[in-house]
Image: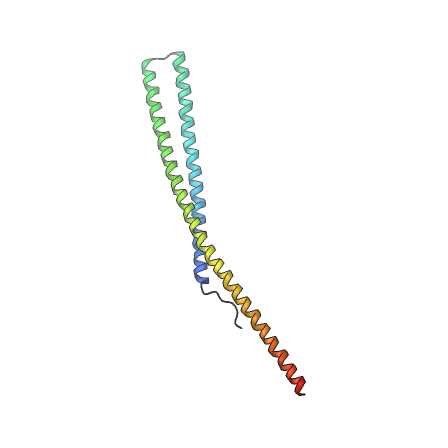
Length: 149
C-alpha cells in the first residue's frame, strides 16, 4: 500500500504560514498599543503634575498674567492627553481586529489539521485491514499447501 498523502497538505501549509504572519502582526500590534498606553499615561501624569503646580501657585498667589499662562498650558496638556487617549483607543481597536483574525486563522488551520488526523486514521485502519488480509491469505495458502502436501 502506498504511503499516506494528505491532498490538502499545501492548503494546510499555506494556512499555517498565514497564521504565523498574523501572529507576528498581533505581537507587533500589542507592542504598539502598549507603547501608546505608556505615552497616554505620561501625558495624563504631566497634566496632573501641572494641575498640582497650578493649585500650589494659586494658593501662594500669583498675577493674572501667570494665571492666564497656566490655564493656556493646562488646555494644551489636556488636548494632548485627549489626543493620546483617542490614539490609544484606535490602537486597541486595531489590536482587537488582529486578535479576531488570528482566532479565525487558528480555527481554519485547526479544522484542516483535524481533517488530516481523520484521514490519517482512515489510512491507518485500511493499512491494518490490508495487513490482516495478507496474513489471512498467507495462513490460508500455508494450510492449503500443508493439506495438499
